[in-house]
Length: 515
Image 1: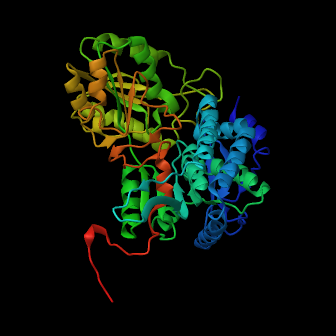
Image 2: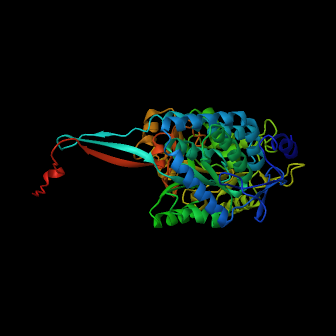
Image 3: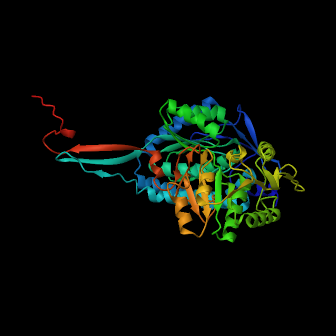
């Protein structure tokens, strides 16, 4: 199965043309007079279609429409908003196969991963439906007689969502499905490398909203980070910016939003480690490490980038992992059985090659990989061998996230040493330990253990489920999306005090007597 065949199958069904508007403000903006970007498939480097980019005037129309829709949408009772989200999820189910295949050809994911991303959108819609009846506030005991206190949660406004290329639609849904149930509207700036997916997604979800007779609640502005991203981060009309991407860009956005005292959800770099102890189920650990390191060709923020092995199993585990790497199927991700597709583009490939080179210059030993793979008929794609490097914890490249299938192998003697190595990086997103020892597990999960936002036992660093709050600590940004009480980020909390008595007693016994 090639890109052109899949493209012909899905373009018409998804409502895509050879040239598509990248701006939606209640209607699709014309493409004339706007800069166009061409979306290329990482599978073979072929062009898929073009998308127009937003002008400043377009952006202002988007913001005006989003604010006007918020006035209507926020008045609708939350359970009814949840019903609309339910219909959005049902609409996504209808197009799961087609949208999943578009994810595959524009992002380079396997067919399973492409459809899996759409399933994440459906799952978060299901979660948001339930949340729409559960925006609970606390009842608070008042120290004053005949007073009642409680907290309530109210819609925040129009939120901004800026997403990256590796999860081109799921992360948008993590934010917007919950935000919509909460009463917010949203403006989306997708990665330019996933612009077609964004256009197709907007057509699907807004179709469901329109069919139910509601105003649009999802808005789109395709453009570069230096233009649309900058407009959004400095725009006080967006009380919240949710950003997924690199640490340097996240810092820039955080500064812009902080200057105007806005809110951010930052999902930045991950440098995730898997600890495998001498008491682990080795077969289970091998599968978990391989999936974590190789899924999406190492281009997940939760990809396993460091492998911390106990000295007693080090040689055996490394040899078996190398054997898996030698046999893993690399190629066209549209074909069944392929586990590793291409890197996103030439820039990604160059970062991969530079990381391998720099690590070796620091003294890391190349065990396997470190080179490009030529796939006949797909010379325009950047396919590489998954790479294993034996390294030391203090090497600079070990502390640096590279969005590629590179894993650094480190040795430890005690569980305390393993966690010291584990936490010795600036990032703090996902972590894993493979062990059947209760004490090792509990140490890993204690305050002395993993310093990450996500901690997994006997499963991979990658593959987060909807329902658990997703996000990390340290330079990962500290944001939380998706499950648990992450909904609170999209609402404003209000503390209410009601005096139903005839007197006006003051708190803390303060007196203010007037005649």
